[in-house]
Figure 1 (cartoon, rainbow, N blue to C red):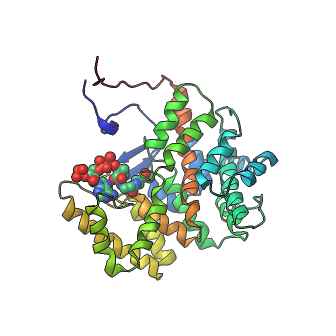
Figure 2: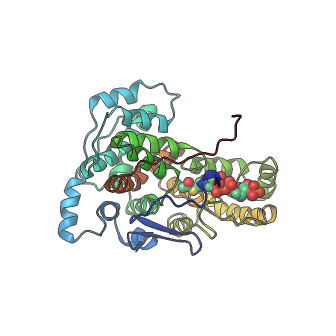
Figure 3: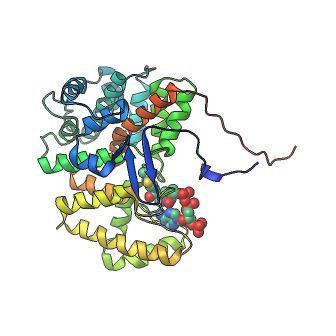
Length: 356
Ligand code: ACO
């Protein structure tokens, strides 16, 4: 029996949702280039595309926006947010609150509810920990505007809204990554939507997946000065550690999302010293990885610039992974629908090597 550690190179399903071309560095979502979607469309439109298979007409979009109106989260969830110990990290708070929703059927309505639920829980908990009043979402704001409004307590600038919207679109779907696969495995057992999302959140939390952006920030902080970057990173690699924000299972070239986010930042924060530093550290890291791992093609991944974009829109580090979870919910729900449409329980095999 041939074993593929980490399921590398194993194809487990046909999908109509997205195509990741790791050689050309392209992501196609239901026939559309993700970089174009990020420039020309809103988050609400891209969610429609992901779930329904085509971009909405003007009429369909008007109806969809009504469906996307914010919902207030129940009092008992607010009680949970306030009663969990201050040591409990944001992703655990999110996971706990979603679990508390109980079984939810797989439907578009529940999917949309989850976006607001997740962003409200994240913003409420953040403000609660900082002794700030919780802010409910407003009906006159878009989803992205509400996300920033609920955290900061003021309406975002157009530049911040555009920057965050581009990030949310670029990160909302990415094929059979670890968390999406997890969601599909749970959906394949015919468990409910909540269970599949809670499981996906658990997979996303890890530092090799959605936990990477805050670690990129930590790395840049520890490096401190560009002049120190090379020796710090060399030392780090010699200790058997990885450089966060680099490497990817699928890409043999630069992750197109990283390039797109770098462009967003150039407009948003081109002059900021921390952005200049990130660019310099990236160059040095790529040169070093080429020298230390000449047998591997290691490039910048989306997480390297995710940290920078979220910092540019003034979101705090502890919200990086929860906000990734908010947007990736779009992809998870699309995959849960697809799994349900033509379901067969996902149940691979293992090769036993213990005593008989
Ligand atoms: N720094 C240093 N070396 C690396 C890195 C890195 N960031 N990434 C891969 N390598 C090296 C490994 O040491 C290994 O070298 P070897 O052949 O000498 O043993 C080789 O490249 C292959 O690495 P694997 O970890 O086996 O690759 P895999 O496909 O299993 O893992 C992963 C991909 C998890 C993304 C990995 O590159 C990594 O850990 N990167 C850092 C964490 C990170 O940025 N994660 C975010 C990914 S994007 C996302 O989830 C949205």
